[in-house]
Amino acid sequence: MSTQPRLVEVRQNVLKQNDLLARELRGRFQAAGVRVVSLVSSPGAGKTAFLEKMLSLLRPACAVAALVGDLATENDAARLARSGAPVRQITTGTVCHLDAAMVERALEGWNIEELDVLFIENVGNLVCPSSYDLGEELRLVLLSVTEGEDKPLKYPTIFNTADVALITKIDLAKAVEFDLAAARRNIERVRPGMRVFEVSAKTGEGMEECLRFLRAGAHGLQIADAPEAAAGYELRKAD
Amino acid sequence: MHELSIALSMIDMATEEAASRGGIRVSAIHLKLGPLSGVVKEALLFSYEVACEGTPLEGSRLVIEDVPVVVYCPSCEAETSPASIQRFCCSVCDAPTPQVLSGRELEVVALEIQ
Image (cartoon, rainbow over all chains, first blue to last red; front, top):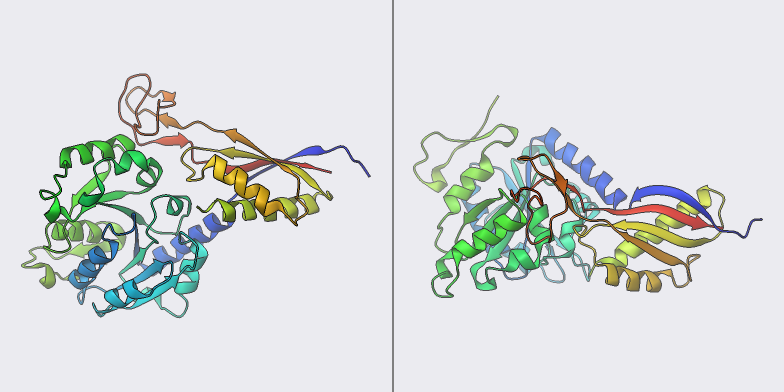
């Protein structure tokens, strides 16, 4: 038996298992025609409030559901369930992020073919979720005006791995002297060309524009031509 | 702090790989790590030591190779490393670019086995 160590080449992504499962989930979502949107942010940036509003705007015209990650409580799931949409809690215990396996388990028993849009709310954390692909089509990163304009520079990785940025609680911007131009500049620096929406779940400001964006494009989801009001939108599947 | 679960995955992977190649003991893991992997090098080194305790990898080394961020510039077609990850732009012509070619690595490239 040789005692001299030998170097063997491996070349394996440490998160290979997660990435493979995420790819499989993405395939399943596409085949089922469901648009999957995940949300990441620091704790308290307004993920749940945004989702509450978005679910009620999308329903009942659109079949929506949500998975909600939380360390310990089921409070967020209870809040979201009030919208009438199917909601499932993923309690992670001490784990600071969701991974693809948690998403797969949480979906057991749901017929995703019946869904148009599935939201996945990640655990409030701007670091760890960036490493884990969940099979989502779009990743939204939320930044609330009370957090300060330089969050994108402090957490460039999460902004760089996300597709769209939402500046939330925009109704409070004046009160907290939030410098919107600086925030947009910082987002642009860490993710050039990133789409940014300014929203307030409380007043509804910017929600319609965001709603249109979420509905457009993917898997033949379309907005009705002349929507009168957000609640009156008709969601149609293109054939 | 998810470095501990990352370290545990690496140990599982290394144990399996070593066994499949007829090795008994892993004395080192060589890892490529990019600044955009979401993993902190110091936290990973610390977690690795803790995670190895009581496994066949106890006492093994984790050798980390830092991989730089490289972006592709659609304007001048250069592939360069931005001065910082707080600003994704071309080092040649300064045009902003979202096209990341490398920097997300979290990859075991080699094992030293006995």
